[in-house]
Length: 55
Length: 413
Image 1 (cartoon, one colour):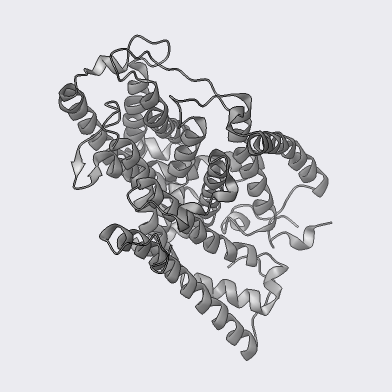
Image 2: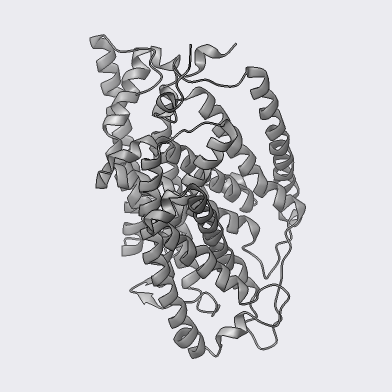
């Protein structure tokens, strides 16, 4: 649910619940985006890729 | 045939033996899938749920696997936020077990809601006054966290890791794993708590109702606390079973003992709080609503006072004492007994907070309402167990789940 949906009410419950959900999803989304972009940049720089099986 | 996929430095059984084992568990899985489709196509009349039991076996299984899967968030919290670095040797397995537990919980919910195609309604048409909405939000988000924590393990498969992009992606995900672990701990605190809160706010059900702090009943805190205390025991138990099945030592004793010790102290503090909560509820809360303790444990064929003793003493006090005692947790037999009792204890706790709550008569004209699950409910509850076994089998065979395995089991050439 977003603030532009007809069910939305500007009260504490909606802001806390939905704010918490979007906050968590934003952290996860940004974290993964950073990982993927950095992986692409690192790959383009060269190196990496090995056959260890264990980190 | 699949040796190129198996991690370096470890030995696995032959592919044929692996596939035969997989197909045996797969048959159980198919039985559960058949029951699942019966529930989806024919509806919830396939279950023995009724007006008394809107919550039944599935919700117990849900709460139990979520509590047992708590080992993932608590181990992650200890390793990434508290700095218990030794736990890096078991964190992969804790993540895998957590991933299985939470995906199972979501699968069970997808069956339980009866109309899975409308599952997204809880996000789009959210009832922001319901603790279950918060549970749904945190459960889904935390499952995303566990998926993110599981992905690097998949990327570390020997063949996948050859690709530079996947190698770098796994490396980068490890680098920021503390952020994901912190998010997971935050989400777990709230959904574990809200699952307990759901029972605690039922003011029309004196067996479950508790007073509390602000909007949170004491059960909110007890559920979070118990998941953090008992979840690591389940991780230890599954590790023990895996070691028994594979015939190998997979994790060093110092790691096992550290997790057992932390779990033991968490359990000790939890069980003290639980005993205080039970005494206050039995002597103040329930009497204020016209009930005394034995009203909840008599005049029926199943729920006697034994279940309270089994939950608190046998499944709480005894394992806690064993695990906080150095001699107890260093003794493999005593430690195994303790973690089995602990797992049973937390499952009983979730059972009484879901099913005994429904069974206890509330009105003066009510009778005890006992419930027997249908075979479809049993099959769909066993389904996640079979799924979990299969995922563990595949992950153990192809992914570097146990970093100490090669060192503990050197291959003689």
